[in-house]
Image (cartoon, helix red, strand yellow):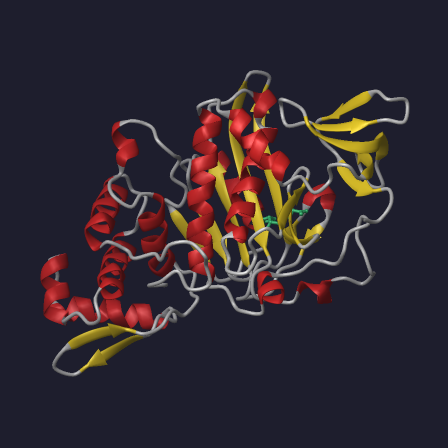
Amino acid sequence: MGRSGEGFEAEAVQPDPDVIDRWIAWGLENGLVEPGVAQRVRILARLASLPRVSGQELASRLGISRAAVHKHIECLRGEGIQVQSVPGSGYVLQPPSDSLVAEAALPLILSLSFPTLPEWLSGWGDELIGLPYLYLPAAPSTNQLLKDQAQQGLPAGALLVTDHQVAGRGRLGRTWISEAGKDLTFSFLLRPEISPTRVHLVVLAASLAVARVVESVAGLEGRVLIKWPNDVLVDGRKVCGILAESSMDMDQVHWVVVGIGLNVNGDPGEKLSGPAVGSMMPPTSLRLRTGRSVPRANLLARTLRELGRELGSLRRGEVSALLSEYERRDWLKGTRVTVRSGPSPGKVVAEGTAAGLGPDGELLVRQANGELREVMAGEVTLTRPR
Ligand code: BTN
C-alpha cells in the first residue's frame, strides 16, 4: 500500500485510520467486508499512517488480543505485505509491495474516494466502487465472473480484481492479454438507474475517468487521448481497453459490468504479431511511456475515485461536461475513418472524416457528400495512418 503519491503528479494518499474504521464498520454491517479482512484493513491503515505501532496499541484499538494481532500480521505477510517486527517497539510497515489484495487496496480506495465521511449515506454524492472488494490471484475473465455473480444478486459497486487474468476478453470477440502481476485487470458491477438508451455513456464516462488518471501519472500530462468509444491512448498508443457488458430490457437496465484492462508495468508490445492493429501504433504501458514503474493499488484507487465521480455525474444527468471533456481528448477528430459494425470483419456503416461527438456521445462522421452520419456503436479504423 502506498503512503505517498509516488509516481503521480497529484496529491499523496494518506489513509486516515478513523475514516477507514467508519467505512469498515459500515461495510461489516452491510455484509460487504469479511470480518478478518476488516481487521487487517484497520491494522494496515494504522501501520500506514504512523512510523511504528505497538502490538498493544493495535490490540486495544481493534478490541482483540495481542495474539490475534500477531495472527493478522502473519496473514498480511503471507499476502506479500511486508511488516517488520521491531523488538520492544512494535510493527513497521515496509515500502509498498504493489500488492492488490483487499487489505492493501481498500485503505487507499476508501481514503481517496471518501476521505472524510461516508457522506453519500445521508444523500447521494459520487458512486462508491470497491465494496465488496473481491481479489483473485488468478481468474479466467473478471468480466465473465462478475456477470455470473450479477445474475445472483451481487450488490452494485462490487469490484473484482485479479493479478493474473488467463482468458481476458476484449471487444468484438477479441482476447485481452495482460501480464501477471504487472498490469491492472478488474471489473465492477453497476445497477445504474439510467435509461437503456444511455448505457453507452457509461463506457465514455469510464474512458474519461481512466484517461484523467493516466494523465496524472508523472510525465504523462498532455499525452493522453481517447479513441472513441473506449480506448485510452498515450502518445497514440493504446494503454487501456474497456469492455462493458449489460443486461437490460426495453425500459430498464438490470446491470452493467465494466471491465478495464490497463497496461501498467509490463511490455505489451510483445503481444503483437503484426506491426499495427486498426491503423494504430502497437500498444504500450505506463512504464514504457514513463520509464518508471507505477504502483498499481494507488492507480486502482485513483481510477475508482474518478469512475465514481463520472458515474455520479451521469446519474445526475450531467452529460454535457462529460462530453466536452471527452471532445478535448478525442483522438479521432479530423482524421479520415472507416467505421464497421457487426461480426468481424464487420459491415462498413460510415466512412469520412471524424467530426466529434453528438449530444448523446455518438460519433459524428462527415461523409464525402457532406452529410453528417451519427454512429452509436462500432469499430473505428483510420483510413489513412496519422
Ligand atoms: C478492448 O479493448 O477490446 C477491451 C478490453 C477489456 C479488457 C478487460 S480486462 C478486465 C476485464 N475482463 C475481461 O475479460 N475483459 C476486461
